[in-house]
Amino acid sequence: MNFWDEVVEKLFGNTKGNVAFKENFIQKEGDVAQVSEWLKGEGAEVMALVYKNYHFQKASISAKPFVKLYNTPYANGFAVFFQNPLELHSFSNLFFAFGQRIVDLGYQKISQDRKIQEIGTEVKTIEKQYFKPPIRYKVSGQKIDQLFGNVSVEKVLFNDKPSYITVLVTIYSDHLYQDAKPFDEFIEQLFDHHNE
Image (cartoon, rainbow, N blue to C red; front, side, top):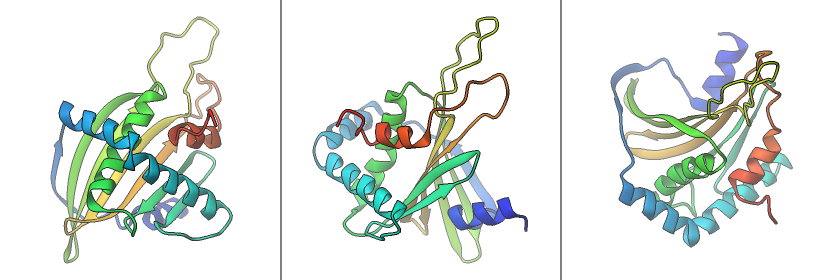
């Protein structure tokens, strides 16, 4: 196993299971409105807690829910684990809330799918939202703005029980693109702390 495989396995778990099922799914308009409403109340508290624990983890302080950091030259992100005080509905809402915030940052949602894998005696379900910066036609001589890079949000369940949500930003290293904006700025904007 190479270094990259080890890193991916540590962050996302074993990805070599048998894929039994894969489908695209759509978030209903009513669900979008419900998540927006949730973000104005309880969701704001949940986002603030995850934001605080993200920064605690950067200072090597663990708190619940546990936040795992991911940092390489080409990809940065975090995973938030399903632990108290998170509840089932807040965990699901958090997955979609991250997606809504990413769209608010100027991204386009490219896909949303669900994959079910058998891994040993467990069934792993991964729901994924994938976002790209908007494609803008390049003016001659100008590099393409990649914003922060591509963003994926995954919600992982084992045997239908919530496990963790990951947010991963991967940058384009191609010379056609401008340098990505700093990941720290992405975090501030994702958690809506850029105006505070």
